[in-house]
Image (cartoon, rainbow, N blue to C red; front, side):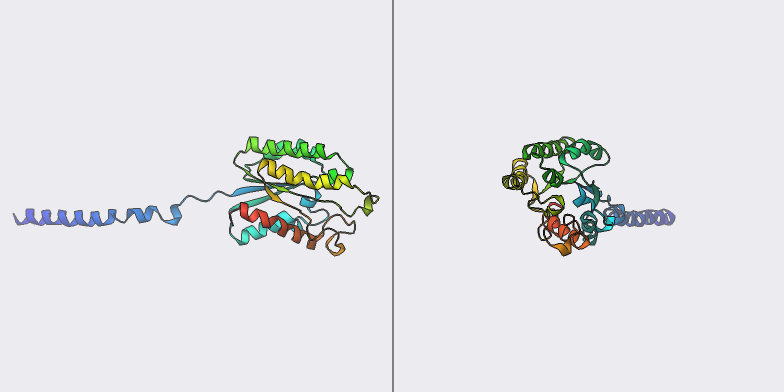
Length: 231
């Protein structure tokens, strides 16, 4: 009888200890080591030489400068630079499908049009090409946020014969705002704000920003992009 009572008491004690350990299980399940990792999201910078960082190291182009800022804030975004020097909106329209097929797109920063302006391409044609790019992004990635980057004249056109565009300049400037409003896009009003016409911030050609100028471009884009990224 004494042995039976001893084993019965031992069983009750073990049962109480087991009950205590089961209560701690939820804390272990919620530990950071077992939490699902945050997916890195892609920001596509799709543009021309202004995005590519013409004649500068890749690290000096404004998308790379923005990546450094994103990293400093520990935001889960990766900046991918798809800038191509000399590209027009027509070239971008042909190229965008291949870029969209390479990786998921969460944010798409569209910076094209400067080379159209320098060549005097009709504003209607530039507008149609930009709209086609926007449509392709939305068709493949409906949830992606699109940031449209605006441009203005006059550029410093001394290297291009000093052409004056007059009415064309006003139409060119307006097309970006109109596209942004029509498509409900996040909008950077003027990429070259604070850089255009300042010799110390541009390369000798007077058109392309130097490393210091690219820092200002990064600030101009970040003023809008930071809100898109939720910072």
